Every structure is written in structure tokens, then in C-alpha cells.
Image (tube, one colour):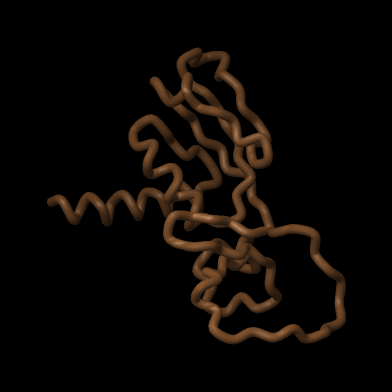
Length: 138
């Protein structure tokens, strides 16, 4: 999958090789390659079955305040998009995530209006990121 961002184009791919990948073990086969940093490449035939997609984990988040009302579902990535019955001001979203790096960058811009509920490993990574940011301003 080719992804374009203001600072370049990226290629998301699944690879057998996981050495050096810092993502969660469930997503360690997923790699995001910045195309302008690939200086030399070749195509080689290999055996094995072709994969049709990336590894995916579901991530639950709760959206609050204005974000809950303004949120537009990502139809190709959101499995669930519903209002919580016991908290009518909270929207529950379950997103299919292929990279914690890009997911955390997305939810950081939502600030206090977004809480990652599960899985705990992503919640912990987000907490760690926020603690490091807080230290910068201490």
C-alpha cells in the first residue's frame, strides 16, 4: 500500500525479516519504507505463499467532547463506531491498526479528547510517549 504524507511517500509491506522492527510483536512483520530513502533495489523470485495484507490488531479508543461528535469514521479501518450506551457523550471506536508508530502520531493530535482503551501494550506506549513529552516541559 502506498501512503503519501507531506514529507514523502511510504510503502507499507509485510516482510519475513523482523530484526530491528520496534513495533509490537504482533505487528513486527509490517514495515513502512520511505520510498525516497531506497537507493538500490532489485526483484528476486522466492518460494512461499503471497500474503494479501499486513498484520492487523484491533485498538479500542474512546472519543470525548467535540471530537466524539466531529469524528468521521475511517470506513476502511474502523471495525466499530458507536456511542457508548452508559456514556452518551462518548464514542467508542475500534480501529484496525497496522503500525503503532503511525497510530500514536494520529491520536496524539486528538489530545485529551481521545483515550486508548486497549490493547494494554499500545496504551502503555502512548503513556510512555506522553511522559517523555511532559518531561520536556518540566
